[in-house]
Image 1 (cartoon, rainbow, N blue to C red):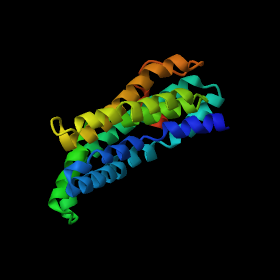
Image 2: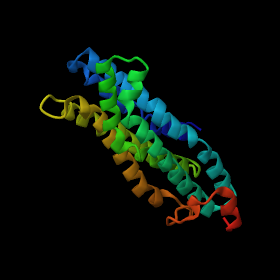
Image 3: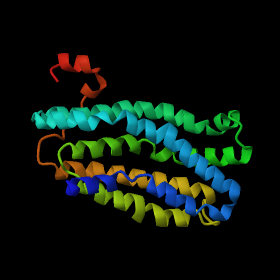
Image 4: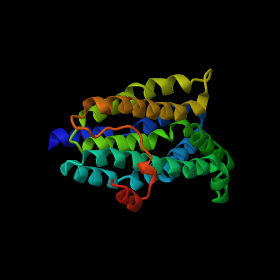
Length: 226
C-alpha cells in the first residue's frame, strides 16, 4: 500500500511550488508579500479547489470501469472530465481577470488587491493545465500506475519552477509577476509531459483518440452505446 500511497502523495503536492514562490517575493516589500499570499489563496480557492473538487469522482468511476474491463469507458471518462472542466476554466478565468475589482469590493487595501490581481492574471496561462493534470493522475491511478505522476510532479513542482522563479523575480526580469508565471509554466510542463507519458505506460487499451462522446450528457452517451 505504501508503494501506491507515497507516489500519489508526491503527485498531489502541486501547491508546493506556489508556497516556494512566495519566498522570492520578500525583497519587494510587505504589500507584495501580502498581495502574493492573497493571490495564492484566491487562485487556490476560486480555481484549483473547484477543479480538483469537481473532478474527485473520476478516480472512482475510472476504477470501476477498469475493474469491469470496460477499458473504452475509462478513456471516455477521462476525456469527458477534461472537456467539462475546461468549460469551468472559462468561468474561473473571468473571476481571476477581475480579481482586483472583486477584492476591492470586499474592502481589501488597493495595493494588496492590485498585487493579488497581478498574481492571478499571470497564472492564467497554466489554468487549462489543471484539469488535464488532475484527470491524468486519476486516469493512471485507477489503473494502479502512480510512479510516473510522482516523477513528473517532482520535475514540474521543484526542479523547474524554483530556479525559474528565482530568475524571473530578479529586478532585471519580470519582478513580482515572475513568481506566478513560474507556477503556470510548471503546470504546463507537468500536464504536457503526462499527456506524452500516459499512453506509453498503460498496459490496457484505455487510451483512445478524442471523440465527440465526452460532449454528450451521460444519458445520451448510454443511449449511444457507451
